[in-house]
Image 1 (cartoon, one colour):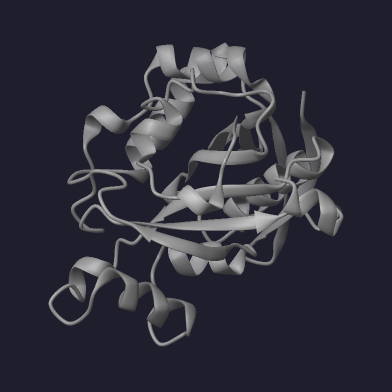
Image 2 (cartoon, rainbow, N blue to C red):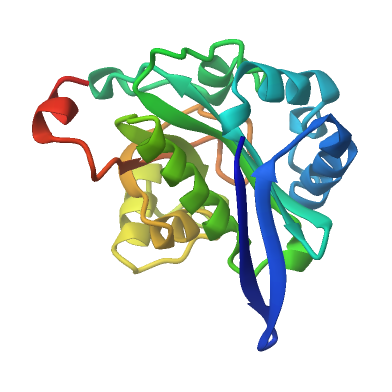
Length: 228
């Protein structure tokens, strides 16, 4: 199980924070955070339900993390292990995560796949999302996986859809010509782009596109990376 204590700064003052494995008694708080993070037009059926959360803590508890601030649940991050082949990168969120139920978890896989990361809006700008991401990087290293991978929403794309393709939009964000609330955050966390995927997730703002982004394990040898 995972446990990390640290401090974040809120308006110049240090505040105690904690990242730990989430448990059944956290389910109501985890669902509340999802509702706060993804209001309409995000589909409400994509918020967590208790069956999904129970699968997370049962099938792969190492990938079920939450963050507390002064004892209050402020966010979470969930992952599963898959066997990923970069030569066949196209997939949907529903396919690879089993609609969030993670029954597709493969203990012998090579990749820690991000199912979700959520931080309550009132706790944003404290760096909690980045701390959660770094904690998952530690899991990648600890389990000697090749990478962390996930599809990032592109919620700013709907504002540019008449001017450029999704690939051009992603390239502009990576080049620093545009800012995107999700993709720019993932870049700041150390993730690098792999491929734009159409019909990745039902998301009106992203026009259903997702940008696959990875973080590779820096402790693996070249032979280990080539043999993935």
